[in-house]
Structures are given as C-alpha cells and as structure tokens.
Image (tube, rainbow, N blue to C red; front, top):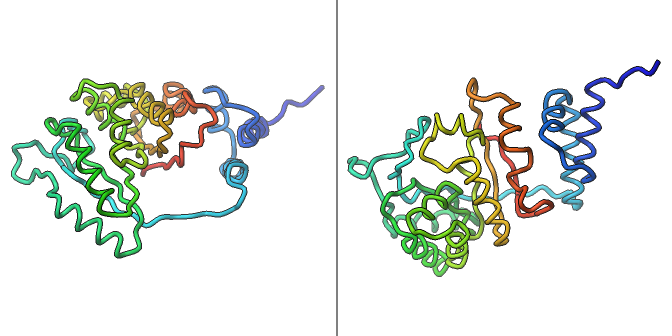
Length: 260
C-alpha cells in the first residue's frame, strides 16, 4: 500500500514548480498552496522565484514621496477618510507651486520618485493631467509613479477614450509607471460594498493588461477585508495570476504588496 503524500508535501511541490517557472497555477492549485504550504516553505519558494527572475541577488529600495494632487473624489469608499466633495470647505486641488515644492523637497532628500495620486475628480479633464505630467518632467529628473486603474477607468469615462488611449496619452506626457491602487480585493461582492463607484475587478485587470501592452510597468496592492471575503472567493474570482493574465511571462509587474 502506498502512503499518500502529505497535503503539505503536495502543496510545496506545486509552490516550487510555480517558482521554477514550469507551472502556471490554476485557482484550485493556488488555493491548495495557500491553505497547505507551511509559511516558511512558501517563503522559500518565493525566494526561489525571486532568484530565478533576479539572479544578481540584489535587493534595492527607493526614496519617494506620496503626493496627492486632489482630495475631491466621487467614489466615496467606505474605508476612506481622505475624500471630500467639491463643495466641502477643505476640498482642494493642489496648486502647481505646492506640487513643485514637494518634488523639490523630495529631490533634496535624495528621492528619485513620487507616487502621484488623488481622488477621482468629477471635472478635471485628461488634458489637465497631461499638463501636470509634462510640467513635472520638464522641470525635474523625477520618476512619476502615478494614478491607478480606478483613475484610468474614470478618465476613460470622462474623456470617452479607451483605457488604452488614456494610458498612452499619459505615458507620452511623462507617466513612468502605474500603481496598483484601488485593487482592494478583486472580488466584486466585496468591491460593491466597500467601493461601489470604483472600477470592477474585470475593469481593474483590463487597465493593468493595457498598461503592460504599452510597456508601462505596474505594481499591485491588496487590502485585507476581514469577514467580507474568503480565500476561495479571492482566488477564484480573480483567477490567480489574472492580474497579468493577458501578458503571461511579462516582466512589467514589478511587485505585489499586501497593504495592511
């Protein structure tokens, strides 16, 4: 009689196969890895994948600064204490001289990038964002990691252009990379509750795929939603790896950061 492999052994084998690049996990396999792989084993598999993709064994970091160009937003996410309606007394659009001062302070501290984000403003046209980017890039040697899929989808609706066209115009104006903000959890039942006016899971993923087709590097964040979604729902709804499923093997996805 053959003794069945322990669940942890089977899960670890899947994790290391994925790390080696010989297997693209299905949602069922991903759930098995998440549920049954010991944490340190999973960490070892993650380290093996990092070493395969980045064999120089260098770990780097950057000095950057978050700059919010407006707090006016139509999304009204339940968890957000930042947004304001346009008529609120403390609503703002950051004046250009304040934006430039923040960038200059960043550069003075050896910063090399800014994370440029804001609310989904109901009235600012695409041309306003293009002008902001062009001025920044003309004035400063700074990497602009800006906006996010919900803002891109919002600008697409305002302008009547496709997300791809919006991204292309922002890239040409000076956008260097696209944050993964607004992902929260890619389960629409959760999104409908916490951020009903933001892009859906499919729309978020479509923007990311469009960015990769345009050779725009991206990041991704995940917000825990305790009690609102299970691991099964999170993995099944997003179809593990589907964030970059349109471009398998793409190196444009720089990092996946749990946002806690």
